[in-house]
Figure 1 (cartoon, helix red, strand yellow):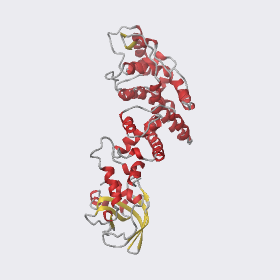
Figure 2 (cartoon, one colour):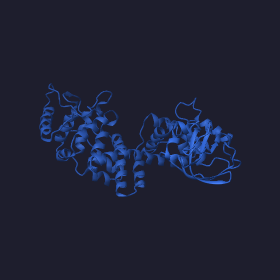
Figure 3 (tube, one colour):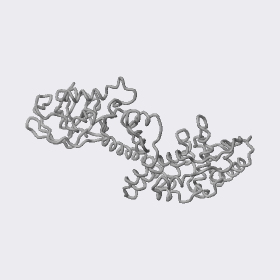
Figure 4 (cartoon, one colour):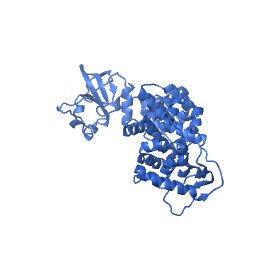
Amino acid sequence: MYEDLIHYIWKFRKLSQRALTTTANDALRILDYGTHNHFSGPDFFNAKVEIAGQLWAGNVEMHIKGSDWYRHQHHLDRKYNNVILHVVWNNDVPIFGSDNREIPTLELRHFISDTLLLNYNQLFNNLNNNFINCEKHIGRLDPFLLDNWLERLFFERLEKKSIEIGHLLKASENNWEQVLFLLLLKNFGLKINGASFMSIGKAIDFIVVQKTRGIPYQLESILFGMAGLLESEEIRDRYYLKLKSEYTYLKNKFNLDNSSVIFPEFFKLRPVNFPTIRLSQFATLYNKRHLFSLVIAANKRAELIKIFRLTTNDYWTSHFVFGKYSAPIIKRVTPKFIDLLLINTVVPIKFCYARHLGNDISDALLELIAEVRAERNSIVTAFQDLGVRASNAMNSQAILQLHNGYCVKNKCLQCAIGVQLLNGK
């Protein structure tokens, strides 16, 4: 039993109004269920009930057991002084407000249909499930409902990503170019080196980036130097020595300090994802000026691919690490990698910037993300095996939000899928 079920029963009016009584056996009639409160304080605001012929207006609080009122210390919290009804599954103790008045209680377990409880138990009876609670039923849902819910989840995931962008904006005093620089640098590092690359970006004053962009080897020397990749005394490659010398000069000129930097990892990475290759590609990208304006103006995947179609400095054609020759191959940024940049950087920053300007570009973002291929990972694959299609990145992003924000947290009754299944549809 979860408290979510009690919220669901109340919010979706699954109570039969016939013969409702409080635990004191007073007749109860619900006139207004109130507004669901998702923050601190009582669960539902501004409800209206009639108890023993007396009209009451106020708030409603819900628990599994009556004694949870005291366990959560609501009797000491003034926000609960206006509670007119306590709704519980099991009334193990009576409760009293700060004025020592006994608060009327509705014990739900006497008024719920067997069908609702059966559907609820089937939903949460996951002893034989391998993945998620509804894995045996999700495949038979109405596709229209599922598509609408996935679209909402996509924007919910964007809202979550916008929190980080908001923090970066505040720290940069609303410098959108700097925020784009940091987000792109982080996502060039992918999962393993994302935090490392972000720490490099935060350790560099953005004015230094602006002064050195357009001169790729200067920015490259700063990125490699701040990443701790120019500290060897044994490597004698001409390009390595040039970068090392340039970094020494720029470090003194701009007072660079990498003591806060998380040094990047090479372990478990394919050579094309080595930090040396990704940092060089990133420096090539920042040879372009007005990058933020270019990204905001581009509304099609093909336009954005042109912006991010990059390679490395010539040195890296025959190297993956400093000082070790490898068979020549041009290290281009792949369309798959660009799609990850669109998903994790471009679409979120477009979303936030439009909102900053007071514009709604939801439809344009949906059109753009629909052009981007779906991510392939174990979670997306598992949902596809259950019949949830992921034909583009909107679907795959929504599936990740569904799994991480609802499924693993057992928030089935806050999910459109769970609600639909609980209704027996």
